[in-house]
Length: 121
Image 1: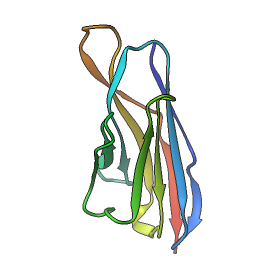
Image 2: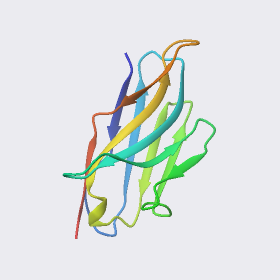
Image 3: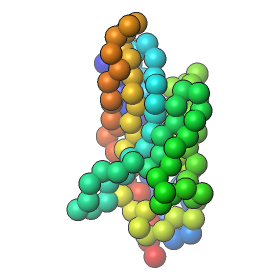
Image 4: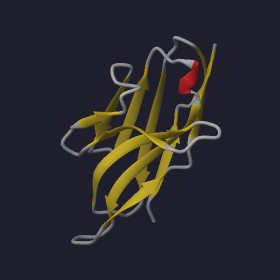
C-alpha cells in the first residue's frame, strides 16, 4: 500500500516562508511525476508545481519565482519551498505522485492527506 505523508504546514505572517515536505512509502516500483496542489476554501484544487524524476519543474503562473519545488529520488521525497507568502496562498496543500506499483504495471495517482497553510496579513 502506497502512502504519501506531508509535513511542514502551519501559520505564517505575510512575507514569511514555509517549507512543505512529502514522503512516499510502501511498496512501489517507480515514481514518475511528483507535485503539489492546493485548495483554498470554496475553490477547486489547483496545480501549484510538479517535478519529473529527471528534475524538470513546472509551476503555476501565480507562484513562479516565489515557490521552488525539489525532489530527492533516492528518498522518494518532494519538497516545496514557499517564500514571500501572501494571504492568497492560504489553502490546504496536497502532495501528489504518479506511481507505478509493480514492474510493467500502470501508473496511478496517489494523494497525501493535505496540510494546512495559513498566511495572515
